[in-house]
Image 1 (spheres, rainbow, N blue to C red):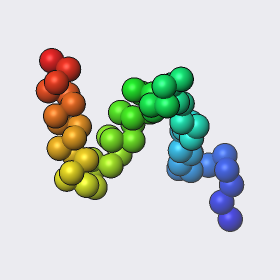
Image 2: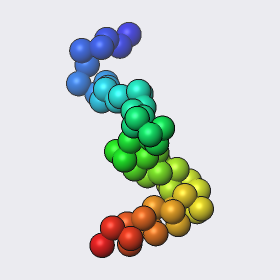
Image 3: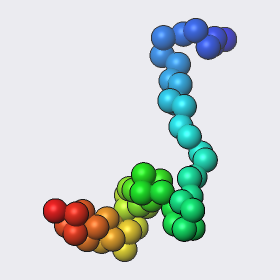
Length: 58
């Protein structure tokens, strides 16, 4: 029988699930970055978007 206090029990860190929207209707830059980062891990199109955005910021 396992208990929550065992040292090998993994607890995922608390993650915010609320998206923030600007007054102009755009998703906040931080939320957009987080979404694209997760998508780019599994979708080559999203990966290309992330790459082009980071190049435009330089």
